[in-house]
Length: 512
Image 1: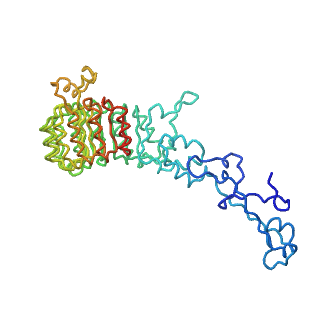
Image 2: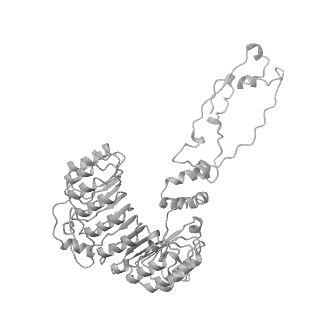
Image 3: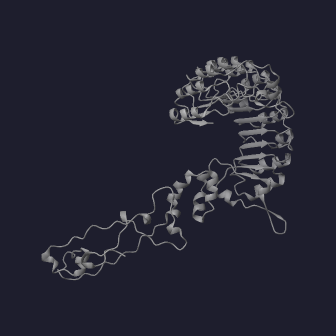
């Protein structure tokens, strides 16, 4: 019930603020929906009473109708006092979409959700799916499809390939297929509308693709320029010779048992535009690296040799002479590379910005001296499991003003001290660590003090360094530009220390 107005007449209805019109609720409930983040809907704002009506002077009040007095209205200009005026005809109400389906609002709101959350939100209603299925929300994401997810089982027991229109609508340019066969790949090519030209990257993992399947895939999918083969043991080096195309600029091959030196020969001769090569092959030797020529020297800027046990310093010589423009180099797990090999890298690859020497048990402080003296552009250095590094080596690194990321995980312990036992299945690099003489105490608080001078550091990982104390770690608050600090498995990292960091490094993500 509304409170009575002047002369006992009903009080005029409340009007929403800011000129917003309150729309009646929709039958489907969308008109009453609210959005958690942002300004509340106008219908939820409380009505405020209008100011008291303005009454005319007593001399004119007697000549005005009672209704005009009750509403505080004055007669229009030119209308005789005491006359009557027809009520104005209201215009049609302004139709506005409910906030829950307003595409302008949704386009800004959905940026705050993760990829998994977007997949769920796209199932709420057609309006949300229409907004979320715009390619801009999925840039840089790669769908992962397992072989069993590619087929629907019909009532009769037959299999039908799934509908991939939803993926095409979102404009995915890369796919990761797991456990697929040659037939599965052919079905994918036939059923995905963008497979011929729109797919730029393909990743096959733990799949049974053969030489014939690899050749068909690269022949049909003409847009593929980035290729990854991981755990695919049914294709051979002959398949690489017959299928690799000069358009490929990025290639990653790992855990494929048939890849050896001849595969590197095919890569070096058939891919003149190769920019990135990642290779994890246990049977590749120094001879394979000699296949690289000046053709790759101009284009190749990233080389990752992962767990290539047979590569020695002689192979490093071939790399630095054939690929002088490298900016990213990884020798992770190349357990036969020594300080001399690192010296070759530092003297010849001056453009390096990232160097990974993790799991190289023969690397010592001398190698870090070479790195600090010659690699003035280096921004990332990975030294995980380099158990021969001491505080002296860190003193060399403290002079590197360009270094932004430094990884020193488990530099203080051998594999035996971590509770692992050498045996079948361990990498040969791990065997090197176990069989090597136990080095003296490595990274300690004294070495940590050298890092305090590296004000350019943004990321520092000290995971698994038990010799660092709470007192030594507390000095890291001097690195005010630090954005990420990893201290997992560090006994010196106490709850009090983490609280101290939260107060003095508020912008830094401290990983416990």
